[in-house]
Length: 123
Image 1 (cartoon, rainbow, N blue to C red):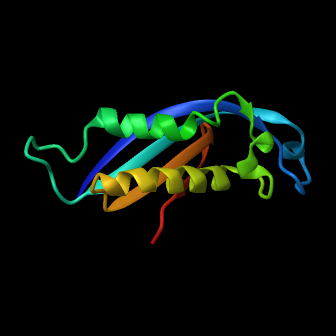
Image 2 (spheres, rainbow, N blue to C red):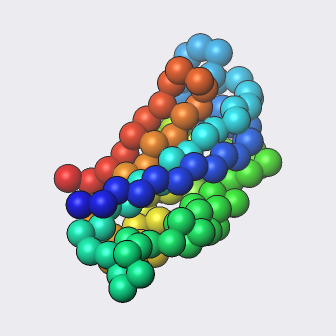
C-alpha cells in the first residue's frame, strides 16, 4: 500500500456549547490539517495520485472553514465544532472525492495546537 499525505491549514473561531471551561467562550485556532490516502496501485507513470490533486482536494474541502466563526456554519448548527467533528467532516468530504481516484484508505489528522490533535479514519 502506498500512503501519500498532504498538509494545509485554516484559521477559524469557535466556541463549545454545553462545555464548562475556557472553550465555552469564543476563541480561535490555526488548525493544521493532514489528509492521507492509501493506494494499492500506481498509474502508468508510477504515481498513486498526483500530489497537486491531493492538495487541491484538501484545499477545496477546508476552504469553507477558513476565517469563519465555525458555529455559524450550518454544519455546526446541531453539533459542536470540536476538532473531532471537524476531522470527521473533512474525512467524509475528502472520501467522496478520493474513492473516485482509487484510494483504498483515507485518514485525516487535524491539529488545533502544536501539541493536540485528532486523527479520524473509518475501520
